[in-house]
Length: 192
Image (cartoon, rainbow, N blue to C red; front, side):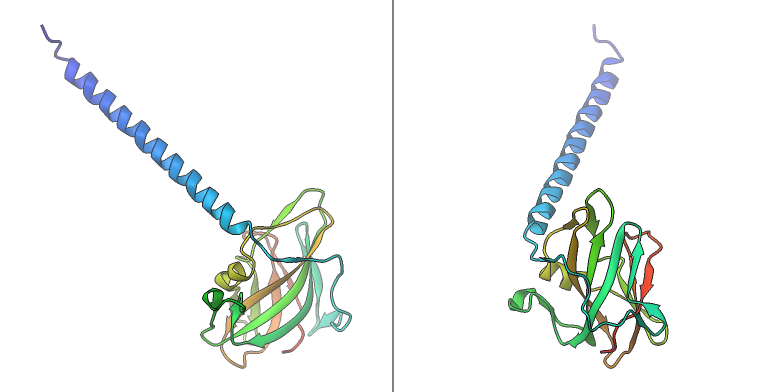
């Protein structure tokens, strides 16, 4: 004779089996995405230098220092220039065109801690003359630097960020961040 509880047990077991399969698929998909991201980001061409900022950049611009720290990263503004394209401009497929024009901001990032730190383009912003905040163009950065930038202890790297701004926009400051949620530090930028 059949037990009336039997179908209920089979139904629960089937649900658990499906849940386990979905969970396994989700974990496998997440792992695959992580591997793909690491592969894409493992071909960075960022320049590692031991020098600090250029001798031509003043220590203070518009009342703001050109060097400052946020967390364990020290930022030093080196130069700014305007451009009609950014990214890997030697490869048309990896070139980004701005809606207005790009401000290319070059600066050094020095890791003052005793552990490696990852540099992120996401929280970096420049501030225009009227207080408007312009975020970095992450696509242009990733095309030019397609790997995760890890800065070793006491290492300095040179970074160039592209910011899409309306034409003729004057920039008043660079707000540098160690991480997305960090407070940041405002730095002066040379005139373009």
